[in-house]
Image 1 (cartoon, rainbow, N blue to C red):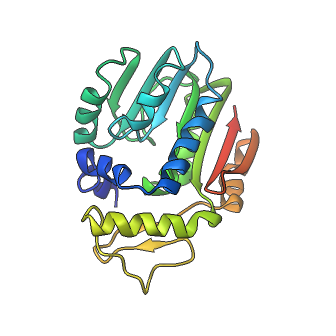
Image 2 (cartoon, rainbow, N blue to C red):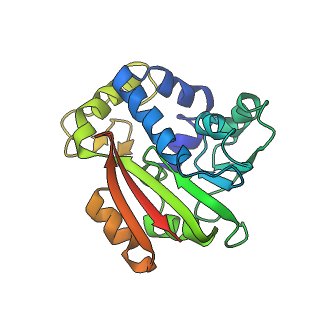
Length: 223
C-alpha cells in the first residue's frame, strides 16, 4: 500500500486529489493547516511527515524559521521543489517517516496531518515514536485523522477522486464504518480517539486529543 502513494497518488495526481475537493473538504483541509499554524512560533524548526508536493509547507513557510518536509515519493518531492521555489527556508528530504535518520530532539514542531498516520501504512506505534524522538523537550507533535462526523463528506470526496481515476473503483459493498475500500486493493482507514489514546499511552507525555471542525481528530503530544 505504501507504493500507492509513491506511485499512483503522487505529484500531479496527488495535487489533483486536492484540486477536485468540494467546498466542505476544502474547509477541512484549511482548518487542519490553521490548527498547526497556531502552534508554530517564528523561530521554530518544523518538520512535516508526508509532505507530498508541498501543499502544506507552502502555507506555513512564513510562520517558522525553517521547515523540513519528508516523503517517500521522489516524484512528489521533485514537484515540491518547483512548488516551493520561492520558499528559501524550506528543505525537502526523501525519507521514510519511521526511519528518518535525523538527530534526536532537533525539531520544535513535528506534524503529520490529513490522516497520514493511517495513509502511510506503517507501524503506527513506530511512527509516533519516531516523531517524538526527533522533537525537542517542550516541543509539540501533532497527528490528525478523520472524525466520525466527517464520514459522508470524506466518502463523497473519495468517490470524486475515483471518478477522476485518481483512485481505483470504490467497492461499495466493502466500504463502511470509516473504511474505504477500492477494487484495486487500496484501503483507507482512520484512527479514532480511543486508538490515539492507546497508541500514545506508553509515552509518558502530556497528550491532548480533540475534534476540530467536526472533521478532524487531532492528537497533540507535548514532549
